Image 1: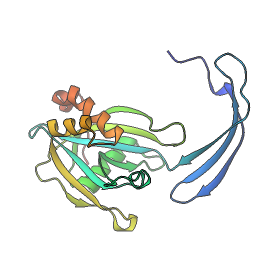
Image 2: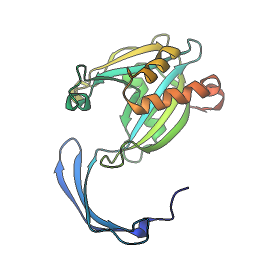
Image 3: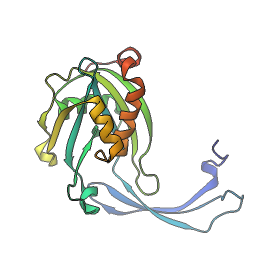
Length: 208
């Protein structure tokens, strides 16, 4: 069970935008009530804010397969990976005022070349709450993947995305042996391992 702490137990003394580019870095200074009831000293933390994101793995019941994408990610460059290309779910930033499920459905068309017929929420939450401001909305959806895949992405956004249809069991194995390093994608795949047989029955009917 969570503690009884709430917004009234945090005192923000300043929040300044320290840098702005693709996203922005906000420098927070705050005090908070500690678990023993006392108050902390002033804490300084930097938060990188880009926006909220919708992530989805399309699943084809007829093929028992999923659609995954691969693209270069700066985190892989930062960690010195031999292959900074990451295999992950389809994802996109949620526009202001847009429903996250609508974002996911739109991104499937743009990045996967197919359409979602049913969509089901998996969960929503923070991806790295210690320093990353993103809240991620995770979904699974049914789709006809018989003609999906190929190369996608917006040139003006420097996107170079390879979409590939993968047998579900192969994708699940990749999520457990380390080939899939994106934790959001692994979480959705493990959710699908439990729910994919009834996804079309329980998911919300939506058309791209």
